View 1 (cartoon, helix red, strand yellow):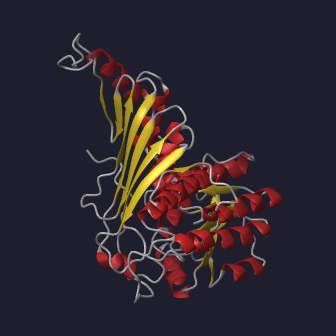
View 2 (cartoon, one colour; view 1 turned 60 degrees about the vertical axis):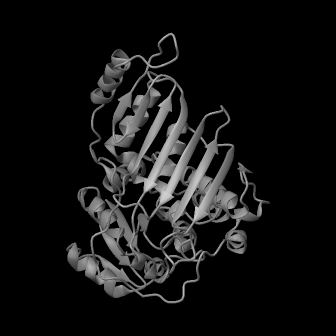
View 3 (tube, rainbow, N blue to C red; view 1 turned 180 degrees about the vertical axis):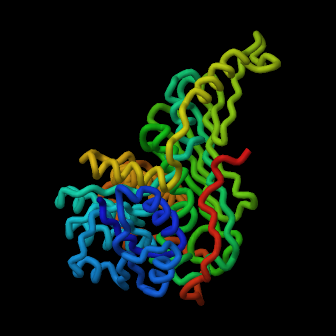
Length: 390
């Protein structure tokens, strides 16, 4: 029986708690931790976790002597590295919410702690465990559509002005960035996974067009170029009504997209497309997609099940710290390009000023200054993605 602790009992912690509770025969929630212990107590009551102990710091949890095998880190991004390293140094395995950390230096410290202590670290990228994304990847990998030549990545969310009133949001120091880091992290992980690696060049534009209570961007556009000559564009936003998220892959022979659609063209002698498309190829692609079995568990529950299996079988989780680091590296390049208003190259070396949080803070553009904040919001519904809309 895996003994789990959840550190940080804000909005996203519910997805972790519900995921763990899906497998009562495999794991048990032994502790809840929050700097506001009343929030942890509320979660304990809500989910009927009578046996769980409540702590107001991760240090007190680690000092308590309570046996913990797996720690879920659901705190603001600026604290991820410190908590993860402390927990791994105490012999705990960890599952870290997105983004892994705001800087590459912190990511590398986390990876070193994992290696040093012989423990396992997973990083949340739960949307690889969505049927629409998983099946898109598998269909692209079939080769039927040919190589990916151009990708359009739409990480389109909407957040009201008051979203950035929360004390840690909307600051470079505590949140680490805007939707590029904290929302598009999902889609940037997806494009890294689908493409099989990072681009070599990045150009970007950063803006804040709707949230004057936030230092950070609320909108960015990034253009990516890969070593094989293919390109991609990524839009990261919290200003898009409708939250119409998705990925479109323009391949040599067809377009594939999530939410699922496919179109294939074939040329006439004059270069214009044949009316009615390439129906034969489109049917093959649809059949390939339809034949893929659904995942047994989706979202956070799917990733948590995978991490539990990794711990039980002494294997690596599907989404590792290396994956989380790659996502942070591409996001860092987007910020660097946007701050400097030029095209930048990857990889980002340790000597690069942008490798550290201090370097990012030194160079970050403050669109506005955050002058007031609130300590907590009342518990309400949150949106965690709109991946299967029709």
